[in-house]
Amino acid sequence: METTSRAGAQGALEEAEGSGAAVGDRVRRVLASRPADGYLRADFPWYGLDEAFTGPRWLTGVGTAADGTVEHGSTGHGEVPSYRAETEERDQRFVIVVTVADRPVRSSADGTGTLEATSVSSAAWLAGSGLLSRTWPNQMERSLREDWLEQQTAIAWELADDLDGPAWSVLSLPVDGVPTPFRHRESEYGWVLAGEAPGGVLLGAYGRGMSPYGLGFSAIKDIAGYAG
Image 1 (cartoon, rainbow, N blue to C red):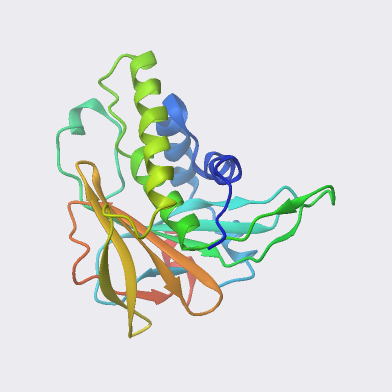
Image 2 (image 1 turned 120 degrees about the vertical axis):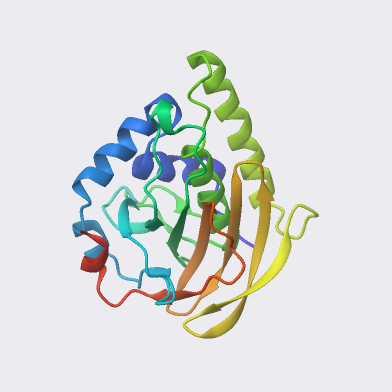
């Protein structure tokens, strides 16, 4: 299975969502504006929770290649994760669905090299890193927090690159009404899912406070419904 390189995947994630101590401010800025333009530029369908979910829906942002091509993005469901100290201990309830374009090996935008193919591991990496970006312990001293994030991010990459390993189980969930196998793992910070979907996309998902069992995914008919 071809996977996105760690450096390339991490760069794309940081471009879309931020990293380290800047994650909180970056996510708040993106959620405040909730832009739909990037989603509308994508050449693949976006996915979210199906109609069984009746709570709030919101946008987080998209990741793009050097030439501006949209490569991945995510949609939020439930409570928008908060980084404020007064909400730190509260068990927040949210699910974020990551849609990744299923790309083959291809030339880089500047024509000087190639980009590796995306895969279910790519979706697992983005979902695992996304979960960390919304659960990093802001009560830690900053340097310790950065060390923690670096360590946990490395672990997330290793897990994403070993989907047949003991950390993962198989969970069948409906995608557009069709039972679909997902790789699933739990951690103290929440849960992560990764699998495939129709329409040339790979799906990742992560959440806290809402069980992954019984979730369903479907293609989003109108992304404006997430834009507020």
